Length: 614
Image (spheres, rainbow, N blue to C red):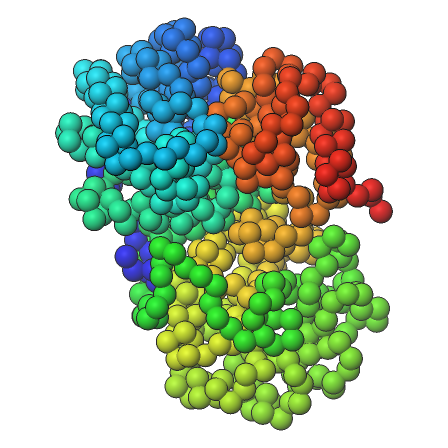
């Protein structure tokens, strides 16, 4: 893989009804209904809205045999109205349901974590090699008949691994790790290869973007070693709603798309499913437009591990680099002092002069030729003014630098000036590639200057800025390169929107926390309470609790597993009933829905994690 130049990974083609996937086909976008699969008309109506919005596949949950059988009626209803898009059945816990669904849907998703293995209970089981082999034989014996049904009905499958529902068997041998997720998938893929079944799509999903990206990268490497080229379905599960859901999805999915990985995507938002489609389409279109870009002559640094990257070693310059959290630099060239108190930038670039009343709590950056050494201000320089750095006595200097200007002379200059923080900038069609090449060259030369990534846009809609900026930053964060981010938007968006986007990107990449994080599923036919209203109530009561992770899950499929990554969990247990979790532990079951938010606050308070609003 060339990490500096964009091209899509070559994959096998999968036939899914009238809309094939992989191979030379475009990247597909899809969503999932959140209506009861037994409500034929509601499913048809929602599927139409998804398709009318541009969705190419529609997935429906199939909890039992009757739901799987009703896919026939939904399919017929859509076809009668001229909608030919494939339907996908989503199956958990019961392989018999998958057998039935394969007769009525164009594709069936199965979850290796609960296809044959029992639902996850977090029990550690010590298997001998012989016992483990017997468990694999059980998978083979049950999975092959399903594959034969799929062959007979020309039905594709998705092997969909979820971090939140890995089996106790996998957990016991591999732990809660990307390696465990990959092995959970490969057990099934090897059977597909053995049975010569190739209409297979793969997904590796989690609410943790770091694990999601690392797992997909590892899976592709393992598949290549075993001669497999199956296409990928990408998604960040339980991404949430609003700004958070868009940034988290664009960061994780975008980081993989930018490396040519991914053949279909689903942006999982806790909103109406048709609203996911425009977000997914914007993300795909933004990435693929860099196809055929001008070549970037980057060389990977020795020691860089794409499959398991660590944070690049840098020296600290004041509060930048080293062990410090990544910083946010904002722009206020018009002298504005507008700021959100929760998201105050670390530094503000003011250009030629300070405002009359500087914002408290942040440093100001001025152009080097007007910097006078005033308290709490530091100089900034463009790459043509290195001579001014020689004359300046500041302990912190910023140097704007594009990759192609990182010449031998510049490298020699940087060796003499460890006090310089580099701001990497790019006007390339594939700015990610140039930013990467910039950092890899620094690593090759042994330079440990902190690097802030300058990303500039001209967006009039907040959603567009969130999607593009997150997609551009994703791989840089996951590669361990980000010491800071500087967003500049040259259009009519409030400064606070740009600031919150920058902080949101760092939080979505799990390198700096500035607010409460919500892990909330998009809902499906299994959800037995109003998810969107519940999320709004939980957020209203907890959004001021900086640093907490709170999960809001519609059902138990991924609920308890994703709760292991959250501090507190609110999980649907039945119609109108909620169970509350403290990490993996269920604290209270079957709470009436109308009491559950208050009970959640009581639980947070009892554990000393609650604070009153200012």
